[in-house]
Image (cartoon, rainbow, N blue to C red; front, side):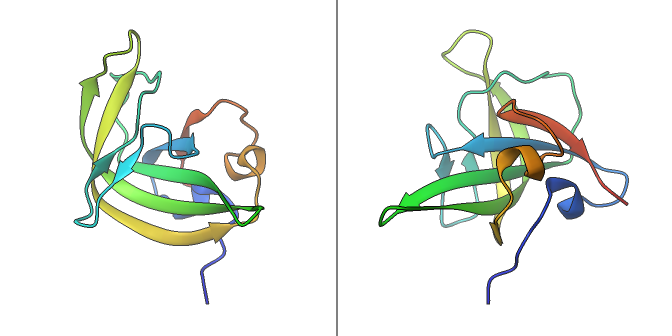
Length: 120
């Protein structure tokens, strides 16, 4: 049985900050070896965050569902798109699914990128 997840903050270790990203797989790459990158996002490059949480909206057979992954940040790279960055990922793991919409998952944000602190 898959793990059900309600919010991003419940996934973050105590006292830590995570970058939470909404994606439909645009420019996102996750490899079988647990590495990858996020795609091109407007982020504050100077912000120190510990984890990256990916909220992936997937459509299969006419139905939509949201899969959640967590990863460690390896580095932040400049992208070919001005003002945007790519976050290189390591230790990518699929955590489960969420029935929460993006607004609920990020505790009230409509921005596709958000920094979230642990709830504990």
